Length: 222
Length: 222
DNA sequence: GGCTTTCTTGACCCGGGGGTCAACTTGTTG
DNA sequence: CAACAAGTTGACCCCCGGGTCAAGAAAGCC
View: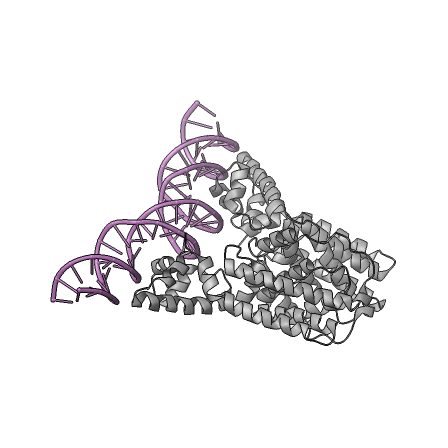
């Protein structure tokens, strides 16, 4: 069984259908970036100037639309940040850059925030992006730890949780205090240096599975 | 004009109304503690074994119910923690105790989390509690700063934001990784000591108003 | 016990979001 | 240009949560 959108694009679609698909892509991109990945589908259709029935017909699910519209953009930006972080001469600087930049991306683009932390597990391409990002951050973390500047008890699961809560904070503060998240990140970074360590951590690190579960709940619960 | 619930309790209510009010209080207390202050009112009525119409009749608004049921409990616990924090010989230890304890309260009781961070600004008594808590944390912070152990650029607004995001994290992690928040708090505390400071913070502290706005958005947006 | 007043009930309204589908339009193709 | 297939539309369904209110039940008072 083929995925909805994929099947459609391989076969030849009628011209108007192609136009509509394009309008929907554009509208979705806009709204995802403005308000995150869970904007009402009907609203996307409305902005595209198309019936919501058409959206369902062309994409079938929100996840297909996400894969179509958001994944590449997010992937590009995240990869770029990770790559640049690894190019720093000083491992700590690279690590700090990575955290700040990712948090900044999240703060300026709710869609990215949802990619990093929100979790749309049914969006396959998206999940691939997450996997790559996870691998990159592990490299960045381990590099900084090998250099002795990042505390050794910090794990990449911790990092994801940092991203998750920073994203929430940034979103809540977007109107009243854009940039507030920078203070939080700054406090945290100061606490992540090896010299700042004052004792063992109170609980064991999360497993990857636990981390996914937590992230999943982060944007769902409220 | 008198508030709904207050007026009702001063006049003599019919016996069955009193019983229902009590059943509703009990159900609300349970559900608020289980799932936070925004459980559906109809569900509270259901658990109380009463029509939702009765709930509206007896309390009128969610806020009145919150004031009736949650405020005292939350106030008691928060006051107690603050008081104990100030009784520590070492100012830093008191500060650290305060943060950890409040976060723990939030993690074990979603209602408290909503009191501390979620914001129900129409619940008057609740807001009084928030004011007291705010005052207490200011004292705790300033004490630790005077002792030289807490970094001087940390404000009570920062503290509230810490509480806010910790609450979200704790709630998301409640199932998969209870206690995960402790790692976050530990990292942060290490970053809040004066010795950890590595430079000036990137942005100015929030005003109290900004902080309220942010907190308000924290539990609303997702 | 009857009569009044108070209270409770549940059907009903609203809006919002997700999702489906018969009837219609409009491309496309011979 | 006609006829068929492809695509579109919007009315319709669902569930949920908040909120109201006329009718009926129950308490209290004499």
